[in-house]
Image: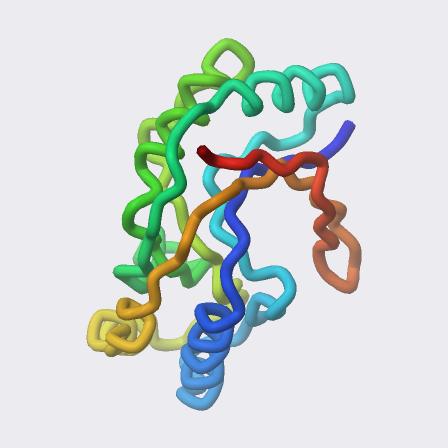
Amino acid sequence: MTRCFISLDLPEPVVEEIKKIQETLQKQNLFKGKLTEKEHLHLTLKFLGEIDEEAVEKVKERLKEIKIKKFDAAINKIGIFSPQHIRIIWLQLEGADELQKEIDDALQELFPKEHRFMGHITIARVRNIEDKKKLITFLENYDLENLKKQKIPVHEFFLKKSVLTPQGPSYSDLGVFLLG
């Protein structure tokens, strides 16, 4: 069984801006946890979970059939999934909805459609937090202007394998899918 997800890689200037946000978060000391390593920053379009080799091949076949044009996207928001149980701090990408829908449609026979799923970039994993309200207020007021200006050209997407280790996750490409 292989733990898999579908994602977009991020250009270096965007990664550098994200690192600045992470450094600011760290300096604020608003939570205990782990920042996502620079080489692991990516936009998750769909998480597939643990799948067997046969399913991996079917996924590749279906993803090859996706025919949409290259496009530009941009980061438009920083936030958390649940104020009650803060576990992840993320950035949201605007402009990848069509690709995400195409992926969902292509894989609907293999995986249920995710109506609630939001494409996101995990920038930190939260283990412990003393003042939730303070973190939420900080995120709501954070100025993303430099990041919003950065266009993210999307020319391809990836099927990735994730191996979880005590040192953290390790990702490798199982497939690269070019857009028209």
